[in-house]
Length: 368
Image 1: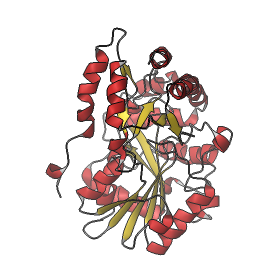
Image 2 (image 1 turned 30 degrees about the vertical axis):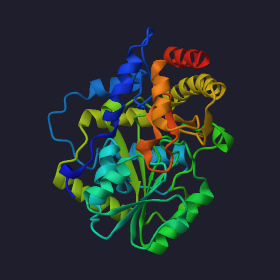
Image 3 (image 1 turned 90 degrees about the horizontal axis):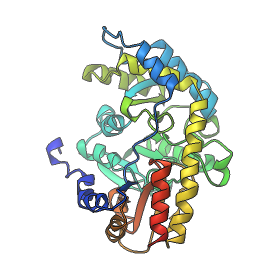
Image 4 (image 1 turned 180 degrees about the vertical axis):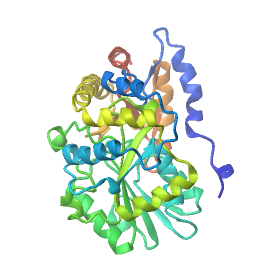
């Protein structure tokens, strides 16, 4: 397979529904794509401005200050100890890493890439790009022989599912039986809402309770797009198995995948400041507290959604029918069809809209 063989970009199919929603007298409430709308924190923007004299090429490996900040952040916020700068690597956002990782790991024909049943579509894209076989499976006993890469997404996109320490341990054990690498996409980990995640941190695959202090074959991927409103900065990183990180660094050097130096400085500021993350989470909590009960009153069932940036909901009908009904009320959402074959009646509501737009959506749902 080549890039030319990729299917049409799925979000293009939403365009007619977006046109309908924009015709609403009070305008569209766009809850489809999780693109942040809140300001970039001042502490981050100031760091970016101070680093604009970036006349030299940046290093692919990242500045010492950034690598140390990533190590410190994992210890402080994720309870992951024992990392060194050799265990971490900055990336140009997380999507390019997700798409390119099967290539950078040398996967190809005959290899299996496992991803969740409700999954961010780029996991499958990356597998198909190198001719590997994508398999949707949530339970370790369903991971087939020939699996070389296992994607974990906790909290999940689109469904907000959280894997606890026990579940992660089972996945790691199965991966080590198969000789597979586990890569855990954890970019919503600061956004826990229900159950234990209202008060406990969402565990990382690198948590010593999961890894037993052995990070071999394990990678954690993280993005600052959500918790710090840095989607436009393309600020992300990975951490884990030192040998794999070194291999990825070499490949990324050859490909010129280097993060701009001002962005690296901004990331240091973001990683060192926890206060803005607390404030941002509170904004999302307030929006969620308005939208969730409004959906339930309107006849939707909310599944999972215990953490993350979305509400995963169903009205008991095909997702495209739900999109059409909501678009008539000026509300745009994402259809479950985009996230695999297993949830054709679900839709994804993003919390990345202003409080005013969320309240407008709640009012329109009440009138439905």
